[in-house]
Length: 323
Image (tube, rainbow, N blue to C red; front, side):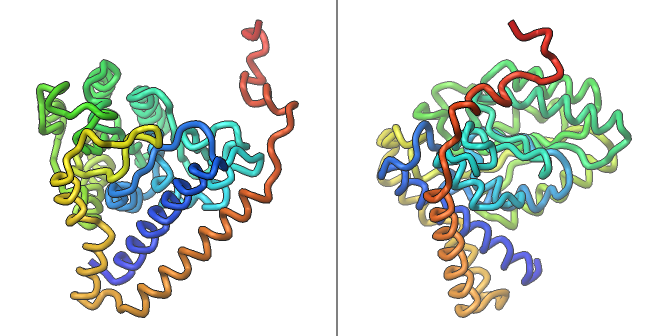
């Protein structure tokens, strides 16, 4: 591992956490409405996967803020979207659950659990049909693997031999339901291993996630076939702001907080000499400045006009299907 990778990982993981901590604060103030699903604790999966995969389409669920940042989305556009402002990446119409930017090949924020998986397979088919090798990264939670669209997607991905990496973030809870109450498989990768290469990695270790995804991407590019990774991780917050998360024991929370991906990366980077205390201090200051600027941008941005309500809702070239 290189110093530059450690620096990049630390910066984006810290940026993601600070953005979400501030989003939580602004939500409590009433500046953010609707749903807000936080990725706090799972940053190693989001950052390691995006940088490990590189070029290609990214389909993800609604717990997507850190994924968008790692993909290169401007924090100002993300925060403005959370605030429902016209300057947001989805013009203030999507909110937290619908960050979407085709220029970044970022097709994030599907509100229906697992519904983006068939889309990802279709995009992978298109990539292959067009002779491209970049492939598709599809990220989803453990709860999605109990749905029909998951099995239909991995089946067709194998039948059609398309280059899609299925990456499951297993945080052990589907909203508030513990995994062993709804899934016959506690180890999710076992659901896919008879279809394609499937591995399990430590999702609290950004280097482990990065290495696994880099290896999977090489497989996609060489063979043009699907691959499956299960990343074991943990979210510190409830499923959303409406969820206290009190179905988890203090002992369990403490166990995973000791595995905190950012703090452990900092310890490792200092120990190996990849980063110094001064470099970390400067990055922390830079992150705080970026978040402050993003909040100021969101607060000062206008609300969408009423005339915008029905724009971008129906396909403009499909007028004949509009009632």
